[in-house]
Length: 130
Image 1 (tube, rainbow, N blue to C red):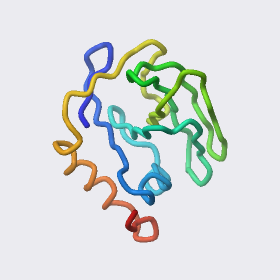
Image 2: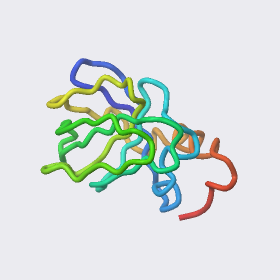
Image 3: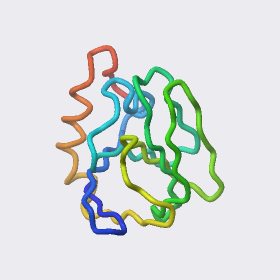
Image 4: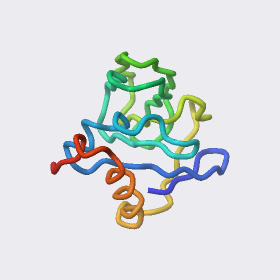
């Protein structure tokens, strides 16, 4: 997806579609560049076990409004957050604030080439089918 935040900044939201992609998350590649994040729909708890660094984890409600943010050091678990329906994982310097709403501006099918490129760049050990 492409999205904008409450201040009009553009975001690329990567959304895993297979079980393997979802379980791997950002593990194989590390924190994404600024303006790129992974949207985990229906997630309530996330971890940074195996990551090389910290992540910004934003808990979103059903309307994609940020309910809480945490900088999560590697090797940690975080969540759940009351009222959160989804999790967004981003670089630790991502500037998301509580109360800010992400607005999707493209459908998943339009963002599919970006998603495929991201997940295809993972080492072979992390690839697989759902």
